[in-house]
Length: 255
Image (cartoon, helix red, strand yellow):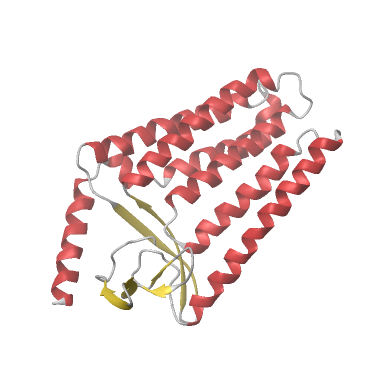
């Protein structure tokens, strides 16, 4: 029975992927575009008019258009898409890079890119005349890329890498005018708070002892706010007792 359910789920997933449009299948490009703009701004920003702001604005605009395309696919009834590539292997541990795009991901892609586009445009005037104008746009582009990576990541370590890059960029943006004590101290406080995410990384080590994959949708295990639990079953409380619910292999649920 469980095997039949798993087979039907797999066939349904294949049909859903087939109904997704080009933007969903190429959603991995969305975080790469602002990352590339950060590199271009770093190396060529000071050599062009506008000191590199055009790179960041153009990149986030392209990402925003692609995000709208992703959201449009789901508005038309398109299905989820998951893509993975093998990153590296250590013994039985397989680390992967990948994306998982569903309806929630599509909404968050639009939210992140639209807000980031507004920030990029507004900063042209707000940061006008600043001596580190180009550097500000470098960090802002990297922050946007890291946030988009967090949105589409389907791998635990990939998500944590994006999260920590966001923390470093937050520190650099808050302390951009580090000459003023209030800014530098605020940046230090913000970074101190971000270090609390180290506990997440420590908790991530625990399932690696038994789970050979870090992919959150691979059917091995899933992140939970309070505990780690094998994907195959979920224990829920019902009155004075407990009840174990079996989940199909490969199904995705973030508890």
